[in-house]
Length: 258
Image (cartoon, rainbow, N blue to C red):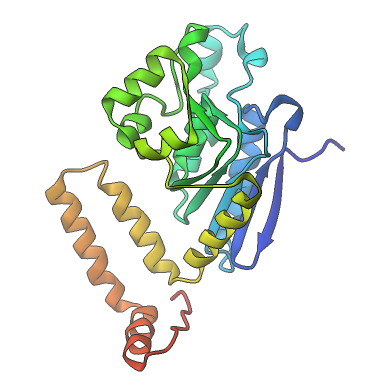
């Protein structure tokens, strides 16, 4: 049997997903994304998992899509197959938080996959970029859409039109990366962050994620109403009662995720 393209582990209430194509710097293709989508959906359905971490290896998170596989495709090949749709698009609908732990190259589809996660923790050797313009195409998995929302129009135009890479420090300054850590601390830092999140009330975490994402997809007035209604809804949960009682009692809450 061939080796799995995605290694799957659990660390307490954290699901760990590792891209596993080291010989091609974790280049992405339909098979990788299908396996990743299935693994993520399994964690999504598992009540014992509260957050996930997606990572690669020290050399590369993912160095892009598999160019060798696609270089001979035609328009009708990619259109009829809905390339970058299907399982690729399904990852956008995961409700539990996913942290991208990025070391080495996150380029093209790799950068786009990292941006699809809820936030990025980068090793100090990380490199981000959208080099598709150098291949005679453009980003097709969110690089022209999520990147401007993360770093602003000017920086996104710079990266998309020149195809240059930016290092971890520039990515953090631009707002693409939430924090930078040493390479040997990356996975520990990401799992620690995911463990903190997974210890919170899961309904609150999922609603918080939905509300933050809504900020980029609706007007301010509609987003504020969405936020307020979710805030109201959480008063129907047992975790709200426990969380506020624990605060009054000056103790750590014991959330039941209900």
